Image (cartoon, rainbow, N blue to C red; front, top):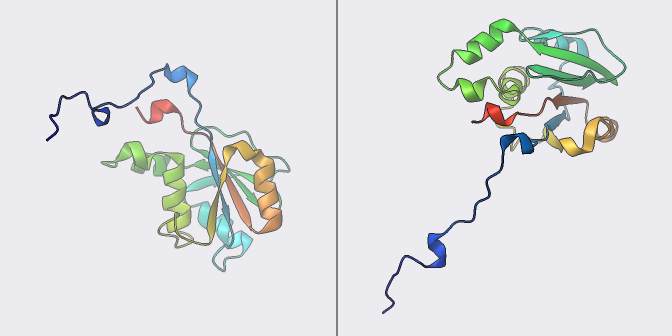
Length: 160
């Protein structure tokens, strides 16, 4: 019989500690393969219930927290989360999660407008890593998607 000493390998976990300023979380953007039988204008109108949607632009707007860039029909739109939506998110018992841009997009666009309950398993949505840049979103819209959402990267301070 083996005697346990507390020095077995499974009692240890390798960690690395470094300053939060040295970490960079890349954005994780989304593409849609369908607007769920909505026209472009119907989709934008429904988006305007939760977002201030800008006039169309030729170039992607520079994003910031609580601002999502939408590529639709080869035009970019700046979508600022409305203050009433943000206030509702911040009043939630799970405000740390509910106020993240990605969660706002999931709740107010994918779930409420498009009926996508679980973004991980729905074939109408896909993810595009931030390291592919805006060209990655443009390419996906040219290949197999009708719309793209570019998200501002989550900051580490949003998590800790």
